[in-house]
Length: 568
Image (cartoon, rainbow, N blue to C red):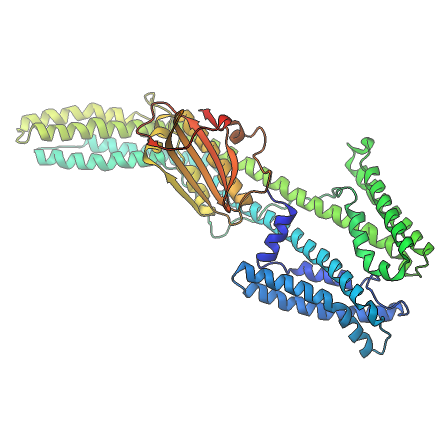
């Protein structure tokens, strides 16, 4: 869901366009022999002019960094960045001439100024915008990994959490059983007081059954993301050659005749493409180290060929030798950057899978205990509390003998409550959204809107509830990884359609998905018929589930959409 264009847009409007890598790019671009300066300048004179220009250029972009971080509105940030990029690039040739005049050095003819300004604008736009986009992608992926690592940390220690959850549940059940076993009512008022006490115990047991195991994690200091080894990965075919051609264009336009320039660019693109294809030959497919070695050697060879072409076109040394170093450095830097991004992506997928696995481990570990808690809550509420209320209504002036008879009926109930964890009666499996929402709510804002009728349906249909949990988990995880602002809203509503009642599940996150974005084919949410759509500026993961015996559904004009609905 993240594309280079979206990364560039975020970098321009997000207040983080200028980073330390911006100044590295400024130094690298300014201190090369590719700067469009008069040919009669010596190497030392060129270095002097380039260094002074780079210092002023860096100072200007330092002020831009302060201004864009102080701005509060995205439109103002974009105006500052784009305006500064255009002005600094167009003014750079004039600044070079001013430095040259101060140093008593020759300057380029005045009629070349428009061409120099235009080539500067192209070169610096590609350099600074490309740098900002790559930095944004890397930073965003690292932030996502840090968030996922924080959530994963909450799931760690599953066995200990299950043990503690079981111990707390057993203590609560024993407390309710003791309240029944030790009850000694003597009057009807005592029976009413007992009913109130039992109501408190029943609610406590039901709440424990719905709540997840406690998480003892300091959310104020999340663990750092795991560092992944970033091996070199081959850049896309011809990308290094194209970028190099754009980089040398300002210099080549002024120093090489048009025909020779066209032939040189064609030869460079051809050699770069052949080198990229050579490193992807089938015999190297299963030998990554050999593939990288061939890529590096081919890049050096391309640089040597480009140097030979430059020398043949009359470019003087040492400028003709620049491609021997510049082209391999650019190609290897692209490969290393792509490898780093790939490593971050692998770490993100690993964390995502681990979170899903840990969540299911907690569910499996506490399933029997939850069943016991539900059974105990039913016994205390329906049998014991119900009996006490019924007795008080039937016997408003009960005699001591009638109260004693009621007390004798409580002893078997106390034993039944005490033994629910040792031999729980078969009850429908309870699956709840609460643990999932609470876990993610610690790491980022998660707003839930679960209608009462939908909640009742989920409590009575464990299979449907599991499918809903899976879709919601996928949607919240996608929000953490891809949303413009890491937040999510979960909506679970029961609706009536022309084809019958349906349970609609939606997970809404800020930031519309990219065109053509979809769920991973074969994923659990995809198999359940969930669809990723755009609604205004938001991304919506939407799923419809067929239900039966739905309690009091509401009327809706929405209709089912083919494969978007499945039966749990």
